[in-house]
Amino acid sequence: MGVFEQFNAPSLLSHYGCRTFIETGTGIGLSLHYAATLPFGELHSCEIDLGLAQAAKSLFQDDPRIHIHTSNSEDMLRRSSGRLACSGGHGPLPNGPSS
Ligand SMILES: C[S@@+](CC[C@H](N)C(=O)[O-])C[C@H]1O[C@@H](n2cnc3c(N)ncnc32)[C@H](O)[C@@H]1O
Image 1 (cartoon, rainbow, N blue to C red):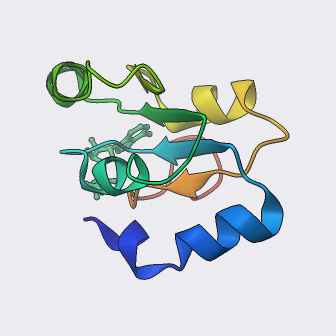
Image 2: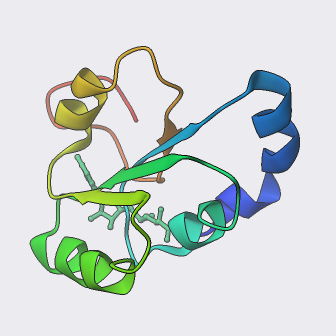
C-alpha cells in the first residue's frame, strides 16, 4: 500500500521524538521500506500470512533495526502498549477492534 509515505513522518518523528515504528500488516513491505529510510531506532511489523512474513524477513534481513513478527496485529499491539502504532491497512480483526 505504501501510504505511510503520504504522512509527514520526518516532522512527526522530530516533534514527538518517536524512536520506534510499529506496523500491523507488513504485506510486501512498502511502508516498512519507506519507514526504514527514517531515523527510527527500532521498526516492528507483524504479518499474519506466513509466506509474506518469510519474504519480508528475507527482504529486510540486512537492517538490524527491523523486526518482522509472524503474528496477528492484536497480539503484537498487546505486547507494544505505550508505543505509537501504524496500521498497515488490513481490515477489522476477527475478534476485536478495527485496526
Ligand atoms: C494492505 S496490506 C499491507 C500493506 C503494507 N503495509 C505495505 O505498505 O506494503 C494488509 C496486510 O495485512 C495482513 N493482515 C490481515 N489481517 C491481519 C492481522 N489480523 N494481523 C496481521 N496482519 C494481517 C494481510 O495479510 C496483508 O498482507
